[in-house]
Length: 159
Image (cartoon, rainbow, N blue to C red; front, side, top):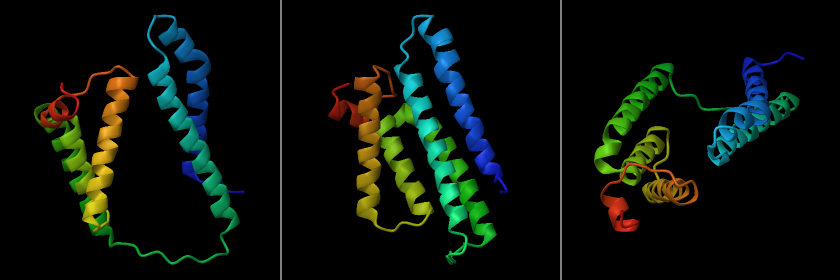
């Protein structure tokens, strides 16, 4: 069985997560008095998605006989998307302090979703705003972390 290089990367991430669970988090985070919740949440997500990726690779390998025709964009359009995404992320990082987390995250997600194919503007706006709002709630309320405040944060949370 030939192993895909992405599966090797996923296996490396799984070993990295196990190393974090049993060595780094107890020895570096808990021992120094920090809260282990945030690192544990991030490592758990990485572990979950790495295992999911390996399972999907096995399923895809077993279903190789099924022919699925995909529409591929021209390579130059894919390269342009990558460049636009990088510019978008630079703008996001630059403007997050000015306009706040919720507004910049919502706009960045809308542009990203539009860039990669969706044209349902209502769903794009709803999903992007909901995701930014939920993420803001998780960081501010559950994890007691600070995020850059802006106009919407003052209206919604009173900060």
